Image (cartoon, rainbow, N blue to C red):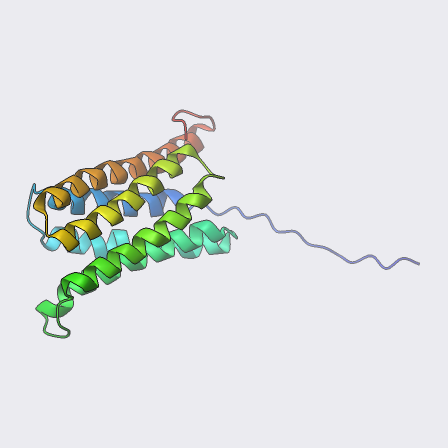
Length: 192
């Protein structure tokens, strides 16, 4: 007699965490890059967004992606959430006299490493949607422009980076809202 194993399959009915992660990333990126473009000073509003929406909300989205078995989403959202938290720490730790401010070469290295990481994730988006390709290609460009701006101390390059960052952030916001609306209406309202 054949031994038949009882197999129970569970249906994952949890929500798509990607819009949360993309919104946390996108809105925080837009706000920081309005500063980089020279439109206002860096202040508590950007730091708070970096901690809570860009940071913690993205880490939560990354953990939710892990539960769904999405390696790309887990890696991206958790990493960029921790990027925002580390960036805020780089700003606040020196102000609190807990660590010296990073020097120019340290910030260049930090931004270049994030640029390389993002470039590799961009390669992953080639198997995903056009919208994610736009987000990750412009984010790669943003990190390298910010590194170049720090290296050269060029205000013009920093402002250009700011405008690239604003576009990148809004492309992430579009991607998030398209996923939400397409899910709500059960059809493609906004193409991805």
